[in-house]
Image (cartoon, rainbow, N blue to C red):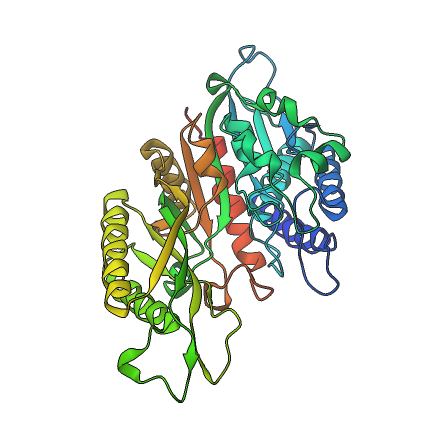
Length: 418
């Protein structure tokens, strides 16, 4: 047991150091920003490739830019046995934290390196994928890497432009990738026995309950809208209150309704993350406003019911205030349930490590959502500190929790049954 404990501690130290090392590859001084196919993104990919190679894996990149390391099965295993697949993304949001996505690549690399040092292999190959893009920052399209693997990549997004006016197609070609071969990057379902993603929770539940890890039950579905309100601008001192067509107050009333409708129901959340008054002034009644809506729930029926109520209330509020609205749906994704048998195996790995088992949903989207199109998926959440903050430089996790995650992941793989 002492040797095993030292192994997990070594993995943990390696993960924490490599998270620091990977954060050096950033587009902004003093902040971590790494977007799809920028020079810093390529540098991170090269670093991941080197670590995978050191760990005893064969490494390749596909035409979506994914970095893939394969740890072959033990001698005598059936030829073409399906792989146990793991991984996460190495792109980031702007001004990001160090562990979102990156943990799910670095942890399995370190675990595999430990097995490689011991000469240990399994009756199945293990594939670790560093998904090239998940966040959707540069081209406003998410899950590009995992959708390519799953065969659900939408070729229309190749025409999307970044802030410099370069198309995704152009950027991929300049990077040496062939966008017309993305379809060839898709994996056959029979090549994958399961997909398990290790990820920081990005929330406070594990932290508040003093738990290092948890088993994800499902990844919440999401519906998003962008709204443009058009009222009538006027002088703040001369337009009577009862005659105003105030677009900002309509948006505020809608936001308060979203908060009220999505409160008090477990797993349901609603957010107005963008709220703008274009060309606003202190002495002008706002004639226009712009806002976003993001509604998520573990159960699709709960989310859909909330969306229908919000849309109906928006129409009522706009009619009452004599404000016109253009409501455009920008995203819709169904919830993805984690496979029961994989949840059970993760729970057994946690329990056998002497830890309590906590099941919880994921409110954030993950690459596992896309991979669910070709394989059963599971997720292991790892506690993050600072109140559970994520997508922020203050995102943290501890070396102790990294060691616990290494132990649980190791026990899961060593006892994995397809």
